[in-house]
Image (tube, rainbow, N blue to C red):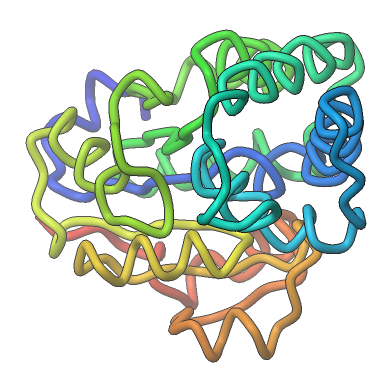
Length: 230
């Protein structure tokens, strides 16, 4: 099934990108750590990793605190973007990621990449995934002002497809994905590939948790993505 034929279905499958489809969460951790050090902030990588999945604004609040000056936030975020861009050619999709997108589309779902990354980062990931034949649209940081765990990104993804929360399922890897989906009224499937534990994802409200994209693919017909609403 192609995106054009899937337009007859209401169901929309939203896929987070970093840590869900592509193995990038620890690259983001490293490059945020480097960017922060460039601006005089030494932050444990473990603290940064816990915040990966949020937008840049919330991530910096999480690792540096909210009572600070925000004057250098844009410069730190730009430094992260520059450092992370050096890895574009090395980005590695998880085993089964592209096949998962195609199998989900084949079951009648419309596919949206729901990311708050920059447009450049989303484009780099799409190039590595090589699954544009089944991707209907994608979001980026340009589509929202409030990032995860706020529901705005999920709502923006639904708006792009003219869909309602009851039509959708989100697949993500962080508690921020699960919380964002929950606040938008969308169930979330959790994956462990971002470095978040099963217990944390379940406690945040994930309806089911799988080890990785390949495991979800193998269980596709026994879970929330088996059949889209029509």
